[in-house]
Length: 164
Image (cartoon, rainbow, N blue to C red; front, side, top):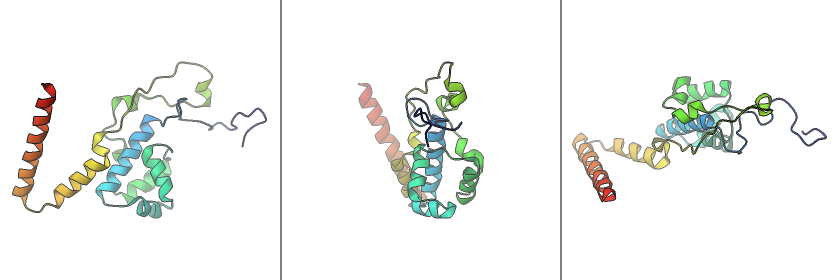
C-alpha cells in the first residue's frame, strides 16, 4: 500500500536493501550458507520448503539473498538442516560483515557505505558442491586420494600456464 504521495508506507519499507536494489551482502551470505547445507544434505528446495512451510520459490529467494530471512525462520532452518544458527554466519567475508543495513531512519542523511562487488563464496557454487558430493561417493580411499592428487596437478598446471 502506498500513501497519496506515492512513497512507501510504514517504517520497514525498503529496510535493509541498499539503494542500488541489490541484495544486502549479509543476506546473500546467509542464503548461500542455506544453499550449501541443503545441497550437502542432498535436499531439494521443494523438500526444504515443505519442511518449513514455504514454496520452493521462497526458498530460492532466500538462497539468492533477494529476501531477508527472519530470526524465527532462521531458527526453523537451523533445525531442519541440523546446524546451529551460527552456521549461517560462518566464513562471512569482511565486505559482507562491514555492510551497513539501511533503513528509513538512516536514509534521510549520512553516507552510505559501498558494498563493493560482493561475489558469493566459490565453495557455495552448485558445481563445487556436486563435485564434493561425488568425490565422497568414491568408496576406495586410494582412488579418492589419486583423484585428489590428479586434480591438484591439473590446477597447478593451469596456474603455471596462466603465469607464462
